[in-house]
Image 1: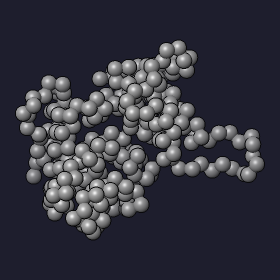
Image 2: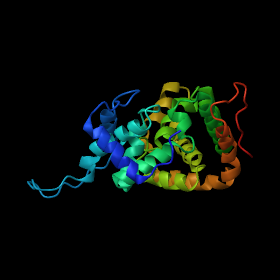
Image 3: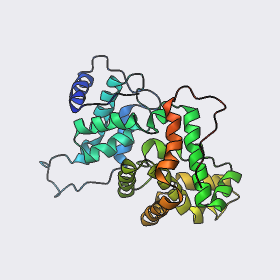
Image 4: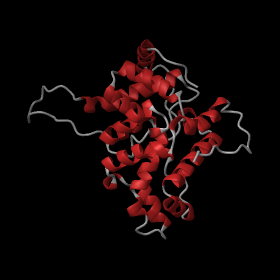
Length: 274
C-alpha cells in the first residue's frame, strides 16, 4: 500500500522520470501516455481565445496529457510494485483539474492508499466481491424490481460497476456531475455506493424498456452519458442517506480491509442493515 506522501516527493520523482534513465514504463493495459490522452479527451473544450492569436498561452486542458503522464510516471517510480493500471489516468486528471501538480500527486498517492482503491487496483477479487455484495444488497433495498431484473439477466456489478469504482465516475459521468460525486465521496465514502445505486436506478426506464435482452441491459449500463439526469441522480443519492446509513453500512465493508490479504475463501460477504 503506498505510504502517505508529502508535496516535495513529486518534484523528485517527476524529475527522475523526466530524465529518462531507466524509468519503468507503466504496466498493464496501455501506456500512461495513451491513458492520459484518453482522460484528457473527456475534459471540456477550453476557450482558445481570438482566432489567429498565436501568442496565446496553452490552456490547462491543452497541457493535461503531459501533466497526467508526468504524475503517473512519478507514481510508477514511487510504487513500482503497483505500477500503472488502466483507470488511474482518470483519477489523476480529475485531481489535476483542481490542484497544482505537486499537490495533485500527493492527493493521488494518498487516494490510492485509501478506501476501496488498493483492492481494486491490485485486483484483490475477494475484497472486490465483498464491495459488490454490499452494492447489490443496497440496490435490492433501493429497488427490488430493478435488482431482480439485473439478476435475471446476469448483469452482475463486476460487469458494469468496476469502472465506476476504479475511476470514481470520472470516465462514466459528465464532468460537473463527476465532480459532485468526488465532493460527496471525500466527505463520506459510503457515497460511492449511493451514487452507483442512484445511477442504476436513474437508468431504470431504459433498462426495463427491453428487459429480455441482456445485451441491451449491459449496453445501457455501460453507455449512458446521454441518458444521465444529473439532478435526479444527486436527489436519489441524497434520498438514500436514510435508507442506507453511512457508518454502520460502510463499516461492514471496512472490516474487510483490516486484513485484506488474508481473507478466507469461505468468508461471508457483509450485508446491508435494513
